[in-house]
Image (tube, rainbow, N blue to C red; front, side):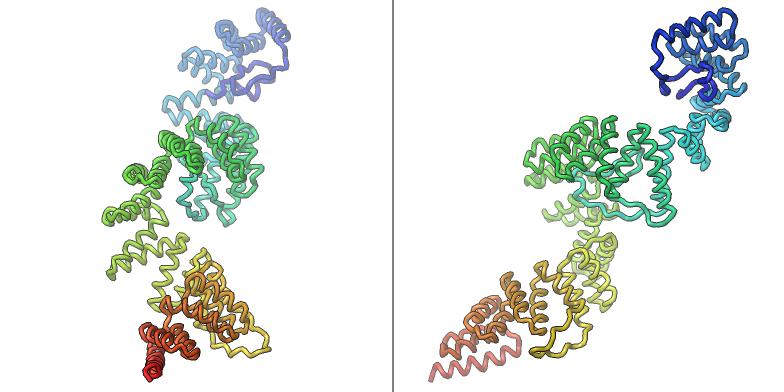
Length: 638
């Protein structure tokens, strides 16, 4: 029982048997209490009913049940309702709950809210919910805090929407558990009315950081609240109640408040609440504090808190310690902590053991751990298992695991499943691949969006292709940025030739995308940016991009750089770049070299490069190179 006593009225006359949850002030010294007890005892012996009740409450509070019982019985017989309530408390402590309930009933009928609360709890413990609700409602309607909370708990258990009203009433009267549970309910309401989709990073398990669970409800690191007003207001109110409960010492409320503040970027205050909660023994808060410290660069302090949390059975913290030791190359220690995480019920432990074994080349053991995690529902483990099977040539075994992981929400698995289907070449498989690519793209997978765009371009649906190209390019795909630029470029009317002295034209959107792709090392984009710069008359910029592309292995970049240098009068250097391009299979570069050597009088070398140009093509190069070769051959044979 939470409280057995009429707190609202009995504290005034001292006849309340104070339970452990409401400790009395320690200001009064033992001498003063002894004097007061003597005074009350003399008055009781003189027949004072109120003194009997107060003396009984004092003795009950001190644990002297034998001394308290006769005093309380005498006061109860004289009609004192507080004594009846406290007599019920005493009998309940002695192990006579049914007799206690009888006295609570007497006190409750006489108007004691505390007795009504105790009686309601008695009936609930025996499964008599209608009677429990009746008495708890009597207590709650008399503004009894614990009665309101117990009533809310009963109604919530039954799924009654009236539970929130009484939970709120208890919270407003200072009940910290009610404040916490009201905050949880508002949190769930905010999530249900407008959650934002969050793509989980498959590396999070290896990093050690996974979802924090509380009563099977998840607070995801990095998740934000809804954008609509209803959900937003619910989330704001939830935060207020978490704050009130945390301020009253509720450690789980402090944990959730810390998580809210961390998501909002208020890391300093979040750290304070995590610390408060962790010091009160909340392992998840210690773990969260460790991540906060790690992110701030203080790995050593982070490890201290992770160790504390892991020793208290937090699998998330054990995973974090495993990841920390794995980064340091301490694989045996890492494995020990991953096993500890697994023993604590965190399936990430098995997944991380799989990753560790795979890195060490222990493929059979990696497969074993991946399977264990995958069978337990770990979607990234299922994806990793499928990749492992694919690597050893077991495509048939990989497919169901990719499917399982993708159906469970793994974005990478959906993309991998698309690759698997696309690789089969059949028309139906191509259609299935596109379905999975689209699913992964909808969840934010950059490469999947690129594949969807390529498929739409093949179908001629340029608008849909552009939309997916923008998504992929925005996600960092250089190929998508290049293809998007090409799509936009094709729509532009031909630009007039640039004249010397004419001001340079402003760059369009397609040039910006070309440049983004070029800056990411995309060679074709680098060549295209160079061509656009040359068209604007910016020879220096053009040469820079051609050179960068050529040095990265682009034969077109090397050829164009040679053209630029030749125009600037640097034919020897141009010949070097043309040689590089021709060696890489560029027919026009080979033809240019043939012409260079023919002009120099090196006819044999010219003929050799003309032969090379004929073999490389394209058709117009073949025709010109063949004529040049024949002419050089005639010269050599003359």
